[in-house]
Image 1 (tube, rainbow, N blue to C red):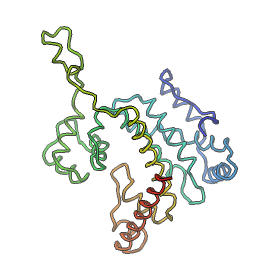
Image 2 (image 1 turned 180 degrees about the horizontal axis):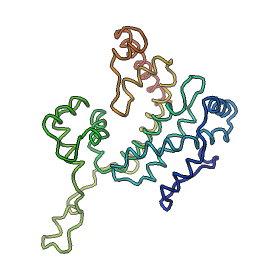
Image 3 (image 1 turned 135 degrees about the vertical axis):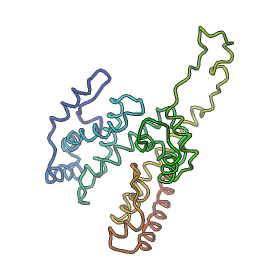
Image 4 (image 1 turned 30 degrees about the vertical axis):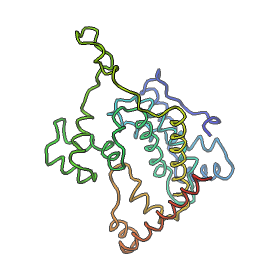
Length: 288
C-alpha cells in the first residue's frame, strides 16, 4: 500500500511548520465520508480512498508524536514512524465495527512510535518486562517537577505501574543521566587503554541471530493483530482495555463489568477464554 500512494513526506530538511501547514490543508472527514472511503478501500482496494483516509489523519499522528519529544529523537522521524502506524491501521480498519478510524488508529500509531524508540534510544534496553516498559514510557509524565523523586512519589509511581521502588529510582537515574565518551579524551593524561572503548565487548546477537530475532518479533506482532481480529467485539474490548493500553489507563474487571452490565466474574471468564484463544492462534501463526 505504501509504494502505490502519493503521500506528504517529512524529511530532515523540511521544517515542522511547513509540514504542519501542509497536513492541515487536508479536510477532516465526516463519519459518513470516512465510512464510504473505508468500504471502497476494503471491498474494491481503492487506493485513492486509502490515501484520503490517511491524509485526513496526518495531523493526529503529528499530535501524538509531539508527546514523545522528551526522548531526544528527531521529531521528523517520530512523525514518519507514526505515519507508518497510521497506514497499518487503515489497512486493517473495518468500518462495519462502528468505531471511528481515529480511535482505531491511535493504538497502531503509538505502537509504531514506541517500536522506533525501542530500536533507537540507548536506555530502553533496560526495560525488559511489560511493567518496566510501562515505567519507561510513563515516568517522565508522572514526575511533578524537575526535582529528584521524593520517597512518597517513588512509592506512588511504583504502586501505579506495578514495579519495585528501586526500579523507579534506577530508571530515574538513567533517564537523568548523561552520555559518556567511549574514546579516551585526548587532553586526558590517563592511559587510553582504560577508556570505555577498550574494555566494552559487543554482547549483541550475531547478524544471523539478529535477523532471526527480528523475524520472530515481527511474527509475534502480526500474530497478535491476527489473534485480536479473530475475537468478537466484546472479547477484543476486554483484552485491549486490560492489557494493550499504552498510556497507563488499563481497566479493572469491575470497570469493564459496569461498562457491559455484567458481573466482574463474567468479565474474568471472557478475558480468560479470549486469552486462551489468542494464545492458541498465535502459536499456530508462528508454526505456519
